[in-house]
Length: 215
Image (cartoon, rainbow, N blue to C red; front, side):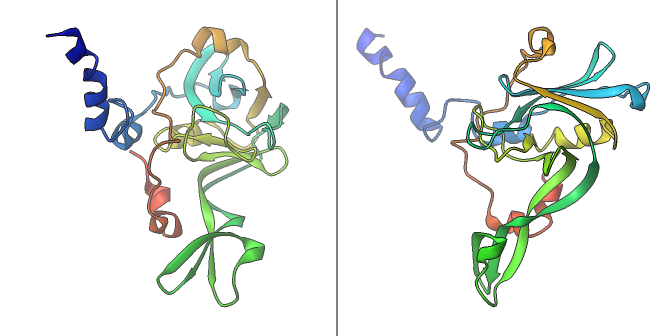
């Protein structure tokens, strides 16, 4: 094959996948998962979060029970750093401030204070919510490779139930720019960046479907 023909091969491959490299589409994102171990002593479990690496480590002593990618707050709305504890757990929580307004066949994203008169408000789903700090929490959400949240810590839809089952109210949470676990365990496979991926239909969020959107 001539060199000129070889130069066009990457372009043809990308075009066949809708502009995304192989293994980076929605199917690959939905297939992503991380293994988890059961704690010997649930009261000894702690969570370490690295905002620079966007990783969370569920630890029991020196043993990692779950290592997962997370999405953290942007520079404008950073995830708070410091020492916290899990204060609440709610498998099917909805936001009380952000969500969707519906009227007949029309649905649009809104904040609670901007709901048009006569429209129904449905809070944004925050599956597997584990609250910590002042209004922040871990919850299911799209995982991007750069900070993208309003301060909460998003977990992949398939991994969130595992985290939820490993922690309990009172579990210590340490959030820092860097964690020693970054060097030991941080080099894990990542899901495709959710940024270029198509969002789910609005009906997934206004119904109970997103709460069940995991393997």
